Amino acid sequence: MFNMKDLLQQAQGIQSKLATMQEELAEKTVIGSAGGDMVRVEITGALEVFSVHIEKEIVDAEEKEMLESLVVSAVNDAISKARDLATQEMSKMTGGLKIPGLF
Image 1 (cartoon, helix red, strand yellow):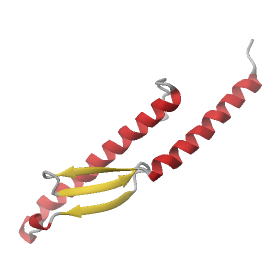
Image 2 (cartoon, rainbow, N blue to C red):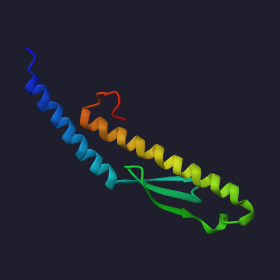
Image 3 (tube, rainbow, N blue to C red):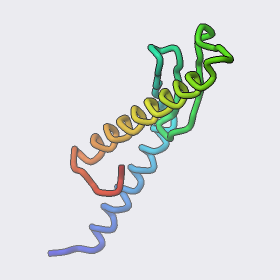
């Protein structure tokens, strides 16, 4: 028989676990890179940029556009890795069950 009280308790439990997972993700970092690791960007699991590192060998005023492109690529790489991390953590919590709209 359908029990609304149990369903609500389960939903609250999942909501609490999601909040905890989001806090944990915000504390983890991933590094994206481009140009053979000449540009590295570290971001948190909450998609906040933590640091940017650019090797001095590629800093050249005449190659500004290339450097900008490498930074964009490194940021996108880091975001992709952070999303993968979030998906892995979500999978642990849901036992592999895919819940639409969570990630």
